[in-house]
Length: 133
Image (cartoon, rainbow, N blue to C red; front, side):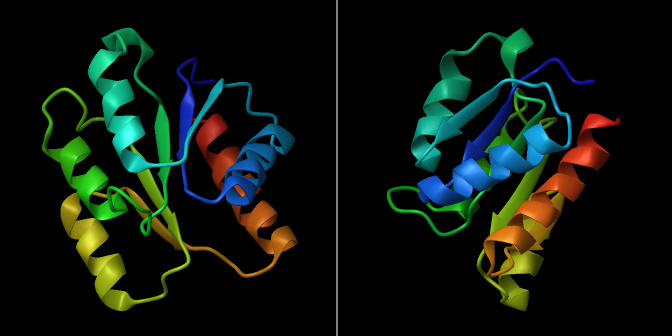
């Protein structure tokens, strides 16, 4: 099991809850840190000690203040943070969004299903894969 926290970055509080719930239901014991905006994640990474970097970031694309693409770019261009896996989890179904996220270094791009149970199921599947690493 990964001992480092998992960070959830999404401006939708309900989505953050569902993501965390999916990981918990999958038996993932990691601490969860939630941010409603990408700039808050970058501020956190700037001050947190290296040994407390997250083991995974779940990142929404379309957020106010700082777009998820900008956050992804900042993480993957940083020599300190570029090793942190980032899963983009977004409502976008645009192929150009998927392509640009992979070009920016995303480890995975997932379009959020529309229903609560479907989002929970997908999140639980990610958690099962992640927590069994």
